[in-house]
Amino acid sequence: MDYRTFVDEQVASIRETVGNGLAINALSGGVDSSVVTVLGYQSLKDRLKTVFIDNGLMRQDEPEQVVKIFARMGIPVEPVNSRSEFLNALKGLTDPEEKRNAITKTFYASVFGRIVRETGAKYLLHGTILTDIEETVAGIKRQHNILAQLGIDPEREYGYQVLEPLKTLRKDGVREVAKVLKLPAKITKRIPFPGPALATRIVGEVTEERLKTVRAATAIVEEELGRSKAFQYMAILLNDKATGIREGKREFGQIIVVRCIHSLDARAATPVEIPWKRLHRICGRITALEGVNRCLYDLTPKPPATIEYI
Ligand code: XMP
Image 1 (cartoon, protein in one colour):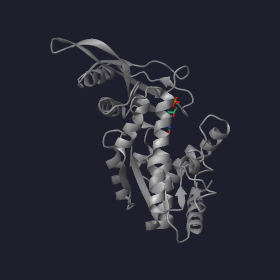
Image 2: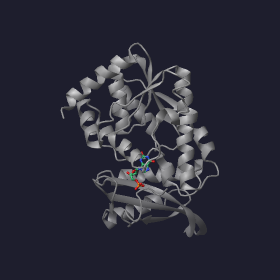
Image 3: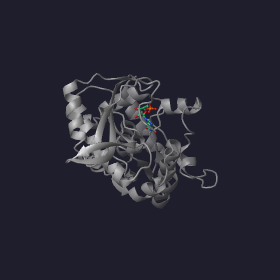
Image 4: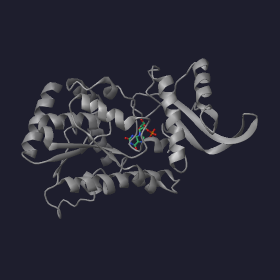
């Protein structure tokens, strides 16, 4: 496929559909929503409103970095601080599916749904790709009807329209479009990071304090393994505790797992053989974090394990 032509066609189509109207989209910093943002902006300029919803589950400095990357491309992105809304929705939840549902519901029905109504935008740009549609049809993913998720009934509230410019592409195609659009490597080469963000790496309840721990451990792992060429690497906070010694005293402390995997498409994965020396360094840095006294390396392939922990 000629991706330059693809870009021209999508820009023309978005322009024609939206006309003089107002469109809105939510940017996460992942490659799909980033490509949609650039396509939308090239089509509509200031008639596109792009928001970055800070759910409080992001990695260190992630919201600021994403906004900055787009500012450098001349694309304004409005950060929306919704941290407490997400944390409140997660309060007391320990079941993985309940946590995921709470995040999805808070994102669509509360935060993004409210913003869409407030702006009066009638067009939503969404980064759905072909794989999402296939997985929804096959029953692997939850229903993917974005208007329904936003709590918008198109029949009752006539006029809302969802535009999905990437729906004929798979991930490799989106990356090609990203190259045509000259998106920086920080976006195109970014390792996969799930929508529910650090919540997928906290076993048990997600609290501000536990997020702080896993966020700091994640920063260490990403720094140490950034050149590993692995498909994905991460830090996970377990719900168990273990006895250790700190400054001569017994401490019942937190346990962090480091996971680093090779994979082609995330459907199967094998652990990476990280050199001992590097593993020791990672362990040393992670156990220097407050309250963490154990660091484990996960040797489990997928299957039987999944990549994330919830
Ligand atoms: P699992 O844990 O299912 O992950 O082996 C497979 C790949 O998908 C990512 N992942 C997600 N991505 N929303 C996403 O956008 C999610 O809810 C989600 N859960 C897992 C995961 O990081 C891995 O690359």
